[in-house]
Image 1 (spheres, one colour):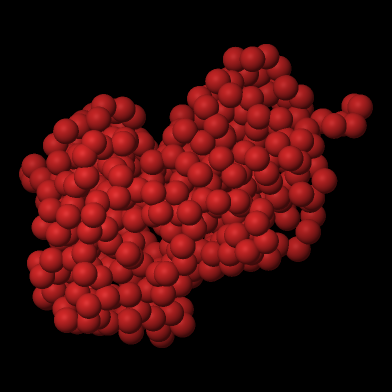
Image 2 (tube, rainbow, N blue to C red; image 1 turned 180 degrees about the vertical axis):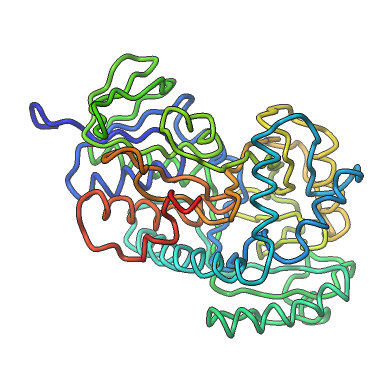
Length: 418
């Protein structure tokens, strides 16, 4: 850092914050990353590792409200709302419910599609030229596996919608073809829809690669450094206060994931992000290990095979910032795996994990300048797609801050849409 030159400070050392820091450092900016814990240890660590341009359509779709309310009375639903007195959560659900219609679903789909497609290409470029190192990357697609024949057949209409609106399509695999391609599956699976454009990796190896890249570009990483407040004059912020002291800043980017709602008052902005709790179990590869990553659609459980492990993950639980590792939720993962896989569990288990996804109420990330300030930015609200959207988010933030022409339209992600 040149003498007297203030750095750009990125608050949050997850996959999105890492990408923001990388693209800014690549543009020549001095960058400091701070994290309240250890770098890459939160939701960026234990997710299923999908890079998923297939995930175009949002959760807030027609019929989502009715199916969500049913979970209040179900013990074993993969989607769970734990009823409690929390005005922010219920306000979030109201805003979510208002968007559960066809028009808003399509609008969100276009915003998600642009970012997912861009991010997939950027990842591939970084893999091909070796910048991201060995993160057990595979680009063989993703299977959406069904056990319910009616649900399987009904996706035909969704597939046609994806073709008509987004120019994307899935391949239909009836049971015989599915079991031929993926012999690790039992005949509990009745069919699948295959999306060839997806990829997957090991998240902790990705974060190790991001760290190496940032350190090579002289990005300073401060761990166990908690953000306290902004120091501002009018609309200009010139420093932040942290648990490790004061840091002067030219620009400040908050890539704070599910914690973003906790800093709304400090940013003087409405940030409708709710923590959506997910779980995963990681084990060594079983003898009969799946070749393909898969989503068991009717049970909302994901399977990620990599060169050295098998991860079972997913579920969505709205329980605030409850950090407990609930046995009943973990059991949902293993129970589903036992239905679909010949060899579902390999002991000993390497890791059991839970973390919070930053769920925005319209399922579109918030990437842009905080309206109250001229040099404070937010990159959050990516839901279950933080890893999938990270590279496009980082590149877009860097372009807006450095005055370059944005490679995708930033308008859908603006903060003042709420």
